Amino acid sequence: MADGFVAHSARKLKHELDERKIPLMGVLGAFIFAAQMINFSIPVTGSSGHIGGGMILSILLGPYPPCSMSRTDST
Image 1 (cartoon, rainbow, N blue to C red):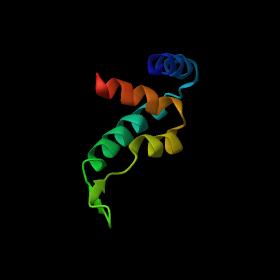
Image 2: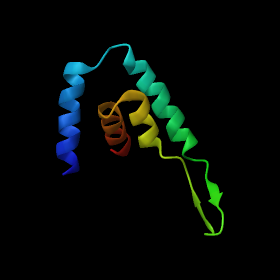
Image 3: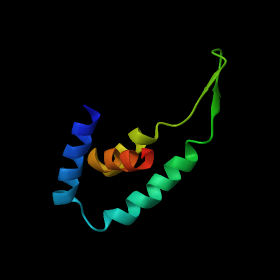
Image 4: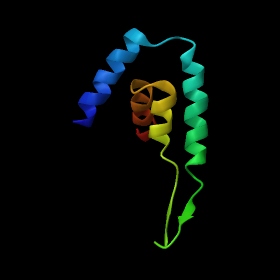
């Protein structure tokens, strides 16, 4: 199911991507990747967490670029 959404996102990006957004995607992707390495403790639970990078990228870039960015990161 995820592969179908990734394929749909890739088609949408191919037709709708603004060329000026590509460097921004790279810089933001690298920053979020590094920022997710920093964990913070969650009080009372004894566990830790990190920022939701995909959510932040979706807010800043829209829904399709982060999907393709995370897919290429994991392969």
